[in-house]
Structures are given as structure tokens and as C-alpha cells.
Length: 305
Image (cartoon, rainbow, N blue to C red; front, top):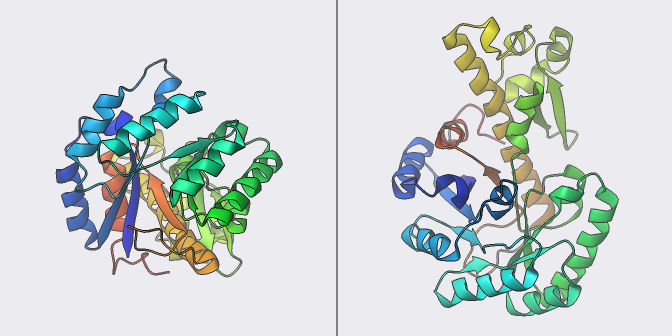
């Protein structure tokens, strides 16, 4: 069993990644894969920028623990992104090129003719137009199939999309976003779908009791009003419930990954080993990673698929 986490240089530039990955391996007891992203999209919303030399130095420093790395995007400037990719590749860094919504299609043809594995991005701002995104993706996948290339989908865990299209890998923060809205996401393997359960509602918790238990969540606790709210719990109760609220979706997305790999069976590109689709949990702090390592450790109560 493999623990897969996506990290961002923007968040992790000052972290000792070697020490962190060592801790994760000890907690998990299995293989740990780290996907490194520059975080350019995140910092662009704050008006900040990432220097190519700094990102390259970080990738070089931690290349022994980073499994996969993406190029440094320049939002809205595909030519600059292409130059960054060339610079990183020439520096001996095997980064994934990126192709974004709105970039001319001939550039994707060129990328797929020269690279076996690349990333598709720029879809999140168009998430309210899923049909348009799907048409764009279908065209992109036709080009990849012609050249024998495979894709990573940035922020792409819309179930209808990843069930239909054979990404080699995807990443998502959706596993943790439900907590912001008072929901727990579960995977129903019998019905092959994700299920959203509102917390603090006894009726909903009873309705999904069996599924909650298979994800390590106690229905009686999840259904109790004030679940995971600091104002209604002692510090110890809140910590337990907060971990439960995040660990259950981690389990759900791990099981979704297993289902996707069985469904698509995407052969790994040269240099990678697992059959896709591989799903990386996007994490913003090491505490999230440590919880994932414990929750998904081989032999842990909820790690079985």
C-alpha cells in the first residue's frame, strides 16, 4: 500500500522534507510518494511570485524524497511556462510539463510528442462549467492517446470526470474541504460512488451508520449536535472528532483510488511503477500528512479496501 501526498513549494519551502518523509515512512510502514508542485496558482492569488532558481534549488535539495514534480507555471503565459520547463529539464530535474485551459492545442501536440507524462491544469476556475471542461479534456485525451502519453490532472477529483477518463494520476484537496462545510465524504464501493454525510445530524448518521463505521467513524458521535465544534467540546473531544472528520475522507479517497486503478488500469510511464489512476492527497501541513500516514497504514482498521 502506498501513501501519496501532494506538497507545494509555496507551503513547504522551509520544511525539512527528508525528515518529514522519514517520519511518514515510520508512521505508515509502507511506501510514501511525494508529488511536488510549485504552488504558483496559489501564490498568484496573493500577488506573490515564485522564483525559478529557488524552486529548482528546492527540487534539487529534496530530489531523493520527491517522487514526481511539476514544472513552474506562469499563469496565463504558456510560452514562459514552456521556458521554465526547459530550464528545469536542462538542470537535470525530471519535471512534468503542464498544459492549461486556453493554451493553443498545437502546443499540447508538441508536448505529447516529446513527453510520456505531463500535467493538465487550469480547470479549477471553470469548475462551474463541467460540460465545457469535459469537452476540453476529451480533446486533450485524444491527443495523448495518439502519442502514447498519460496525464496528471491538477485538482481533478470530480467523480464523473475521473471515472470517465483514464488519468494516470490526479490530486485533490476535496478530502479535507468537506470539513469546512460540515460534511464527511465516504466511499460506497457497492454503489461505486462518493457519499456526503452532513455531521451533527442524528438522522443522517443513522442512515449511513454502516458506511461510517467502515471508514472508522462512530455514527453516534458524528450525529451528535456540535460535532467537531470547539465551542461544544472539550479539547480532547474536539481533537478526537476533528481527526475523525478528516480521517474518514482520507480512507474514502484511498478506496476511490483503488477503484479507479481497477477501472482504468493505466500503464505507468517510464520511471514510474504503479498502475493508474493514482490519487494524491493535497496537504497543506505536516499534521495532515501524519494523520494520513497513520490512517492508511497497512493493517490499520480502515486501510483495507
